[in-house]
Amino acid sequence: MQFNKLTQELLNQFIAILGAGYVHTDNANLLLNASDETEDLIFYPEVVLLPRTTSEISALLKICNTHVIPVTARGAGTGLSGGALPVYGGVVLNMKRFNEILLIDEQNHQVIVEPGVITQVLQDAVKEKGLFYPPDPASKGSCFIGGNVSENSGGPKAVKYGVVKDYVLNLEVVLPNGEIIWTGANVLKNATGFNLTQLLVGSEGLLGIITKIVLKLIPYPTKNKLLLASFESAETACATVSKIFQAGIIPSGLEFMERDAIDWALKYSNDVKMEVADVVQAHLLIEVDGNDDNQIMQSIEVISEVLTTMGCDIILFAETEAEKANLWRLRRGVAEAVKAHSIYKEEDTVVPRAALPQLLKGVKKIGQQYGFKSVCYGHAGDGNLHVNIIKGDLTDQQWNTELPKAIHELFTLVVQLGGTISGEHGIGWVQKNYMPIAFNEVQLSLMKQIKNVFDPNGILNPGKVFN
Image 1 (cartoon, rainbow, N blue to C red):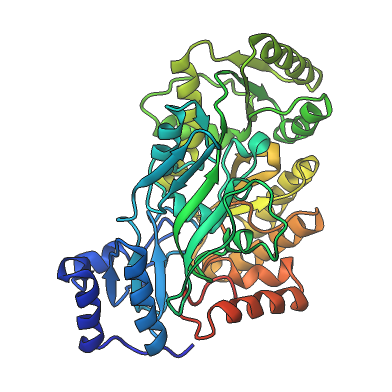
Image 2 (image 1 turned 180 degrees about the vertical axis):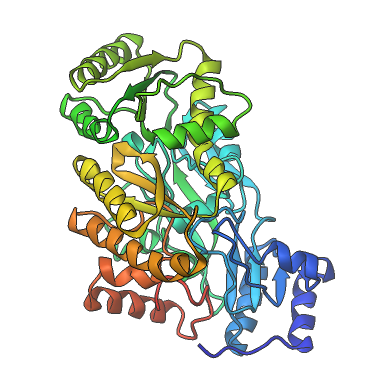
């Protein structure tokens, strides 16, 4: 790709729009916006811009589009696929000043929110009104709702309640040429033309800059039960997942953690103390929620019967809210624990949940072939397995040359099992080479043509998703 460099004249135009305090070219601010949570990758922008209004973004994009300057929108920087990395330099459009909840519409169970609002802040605000926004990625305490929309994020609650796309009704978007549009309408049903809203969800910042988000809400479930089930076989734990659904139960959370995942999380956590028997090789964390205690207990009884039939070793019930919080903290802390222990790569695989045992078995077989250890965990209820590949004793040559072959084999297996190469982390910078495993030339060509219709100069988040 051929882009132009920023000039002082263009910087002066940015300052005229935003004010000097929101145009940063100093090394400290460039470094803060040069990386996200993806491995150790760093790409410096030429300037960091912090707009506050949709009209400011429109004016900035008109300039960048006219002069062919690359623009990368950035949220909280919690991404795991390099989606916010300014790989071609240029402008980082930092959205942290778009941080207001504009309207909680209790009558229609909707909320209008800006993209820089932290996900948990949004959830807590609507909860006060008795309403529920379910998508809850592990980084919900720091990630922005705009980034969640751009990546179509999920989280533990997705198994029952769905992912971000299931809640987005309408979006205000600034196109690369500066035009401002709404993609749909604030209604639950819409059969009017192409669904531009859903096209923007999960588009990873390639098509436009999202400035307002209209989300559907549902009533908040007031009660829940949580249990932790241990197994002597990780594959048996995975096989148990589909058995629970076959018994007619849809949990509000169903998480898988193999032995290393929970061991590392326990070492990393100062709050959670728990003894794990030597024979235990995996755990399922299972939550059931609702508003009726009797219905919840009936579901728990059915789940317990399934667990016993499948040879579950021990079932531990969280009796208090503190115990529930500790178990969820343990699960959410796995990723940080792995990161703290070693250099690693995290692959975000997803298959039909009945294929989880085959996927886990395949992961371990590929690891033996290429000499790497993996720590696996994830949202088992929707077939989403996070595979953390640990560098350990691998040489740099093995890590940089042989490991991509192993990942190619892993993704090939995932597709053969009816799945795909990313469930919730997106493609971004690090996974784009593997897109031809999941899509043929016709499919990729259609996606590239859509990108070209929205962004003919290719200025938005260049270098991502496609080679």
